[in-house]
Amino acid sequence: MLPQKRSRAAYAAGEKVLARLRPTDGGGYEARVIRRLAAAADRVLGVVTTVGETTRIVPVDKRARVEFLLAPEASMGAAPGELVWAEVQPGRPLGLKQARVAERLGPTMGPRSISLITIHDHDIPFEFPAEALSQAETAGSAPLAGRVDLRSIPLVTIDGEDARDFDDAVWAEPDGDAGNVGGWHLLVAIADVAHYVRPGSPLDREALKRGNSVYFPDRVVPMLPHALSNGWCSLVPGEDRPCLAAHLWIDADGGLLRHRFERAAIRSAARLTYRQVQAARDGRFDDATAPLAEAVIAPLYEVFAALARARANRGVLELEVPERRVLIGADGGVAGIELRERLDSHKLIEEFMIAANVAAAEALEERKAPAMYRVHDQPSREKLESLREFLETIDLRLPRGQGVMRPRDFNRILARVEGRPEARMVNEVVLRSQAQAAYDPTNIGHFGLALRRYCHFTSPIRRYADLLVHRALIRAFRFGDDGLPADGEDFGRIAEHISVTERRAASAERDAVDRYTAVFLSEQVGCVLPGRIGGVTRFGLFVTLEGSGADGLVPISSLPDDYYVHDEKAHCLIGRNHGLTFRLGDTVDARLVEANPLTGGVILELMGAGGERRGRPRRGSPLPRGRAPARRRR
Image 1: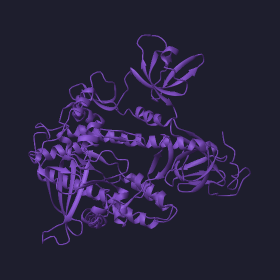
Image 2: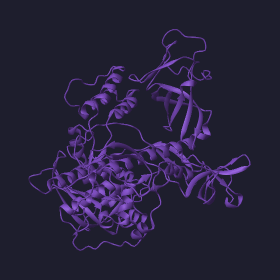
Image 3: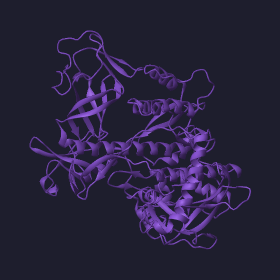
C-alpha cells in the first residue's frame, strides 16, 4: 500500500514508479515513492540520425535506451540533425520499432529546440488536457456582486518588460490614523485565481500536477492555460478583474501593525515595468509614469523605505549571487547573455509581496485555518562545520558555541568580504551551506527571511501553493463557496509534491540557460577567456567564465601531470608531488575546448600558471599566461 502522506490519488492506475518498501505491522509492505518512471511513450521527441544504411530517431530523453527506425516515406523530409516530434508505430515485437515524423522542429541546435529538449528532459507537462483547455476558454468575467469595489483606486502592476501575466497590483497612501504617525496603508491586490480554478476541476487537477509555471528564455510553460494566465486572471490595465485584496497598515519603521483581507474588484491604472518605475523615481518620466509620479509612485517608495528598515532590523540573510539572463534576438537566436538587474523597483515589489505573505500566514493562524507555509530551516550542523573550516582557510571566522545561528551571523561574514576578490566565492559557499526552502503545513519559520511565519499568497497564477492559501483564506473568512473543501485537502501530500515540482522547475530553468549559453559560446571554441574557479571536485574544476557566466568543467586529466588530492573542506585540488594548488575563487585563463548545446556542457582547459605552486618547480610545469596549455594527463 502507499502511505497516507503520498496517497494513491497522486498517481494514475498502471503508472510505473520507483519505490522504497518498508514492512508494516500487518505483515504487508508500505511503499514510499521515490520517483515516477517513464512509461512507454506513443510520441517521442528525438533527433533524426543516420546509423549505417538506416535512418533512426534517437530520443533526447537521457533515460531512453531505445531508438526508432524511420522509413523515408515517414520522415516528412526531415534530414539528419533535425529535432522532430514522432509517433511510435505499433507492431514489430522484435527489433527496433518504427516511428513516423509528426512535426519538424528545425535543427537540433536551433533556438526553438533548446527549451523543448529541456522540457522533455525534466518530464515537465506542457500540453493541457482538452477538458482543462475547454474550461479555461469558456471562462468569462467574474460577477461584481459580493465583492468590494476598489476600481477607483489607481493600483498599478510592476513587472519585467517581457512579462505577460500580471497577478499583483499595488498602491499606498499615508495612514490617517493619529496613532500611526508616519505610517502607511499599503494595498496589495492579487488575482482571484480561485474563482476560476475550483477544487477537483480539470483545471485544478492539471494545476496540481504541474505545481508551478516554468520559465525559459524563449517561452513559459504555464501552470494555467493562456486563456486564464494571460487573460481573465491577469490584472491587465483598464479592465475589471476579480482579486483577493490585502490591506496592510505599516508603521514608520516598517512594522506590520494589522491587516484586512477582502474579496474585491479592481481596475489596474497602468502596466509599468521595473525600469520605468526606477526611472521615474530618478526623475526621468515618460507618458505612463508622469501622471502617476507623485500620487502613486512616490508613496510606494516611502513604504519601501520603511519596510527596508524593518528588513535590516530583522537581519535578513543578504546574499549577492549573480543571475544570468539570456537575451533572445528577433530571429530567435541568442543575442547575448547578461546579469539580471537588481533595481530598487525590484526590491520594492519583493518587500511588498513579503509583507502580504506574512499577513496571509498571520490571518490563517488567527482563524486557526490550515495553511501551506513556506518554510526554511536552519543550516545543519554538518554544513555549518564545513563552512567554518572553509572560512578558516581564508582567515574568516564563523562564531562557535552559540545556541542558534542567525542570518545576521552570516551577514557579518559577507560584509567583511564585500568588494574583495573572494566576495563572490564566499557568497556562493554560504548559499551552499543553507537548507533548502520548501512547502509544509507545519510551520517552522523562515530562517533566511528571519520570519516566524510565512506563506506564499501573491502568485496564484504560477504557484499552486498560493492557490491553496487563497482557498484557505476564502474558507476562513467565508468569502464564497469556492474555498477549501469542507473535508480539507491532504496538505502533507500536496506540500511534498509541489516542493518536488518547484525543484524540478528550478533545475530545468538552470539547464535551459546552460544550453542557451552553450549555443552562444559554440562560436568561440578555441578562444581563451578569463574566469574564476567556482567549484572543486575530485574529478576536476568548474570555472565560471566572465561575461557569459557559463560554468565549464576543467577535467582533472587536463591538469599538469601529477596526482591531485581533493581537499573537500578547503575546496581545493593539491598536486601530491609538486604542490600545484587550485583553489575555489582563483582567477584563471581558460581555453574553450567544447560547448555542447544539446547537453549544455562546456569543457575548458587552463592556460598559464593556473594555480598556486607549492614546492619546487618541475619540468613540464604550466607555462606563463598567454601561452599554450600544459599537456594532458591521460
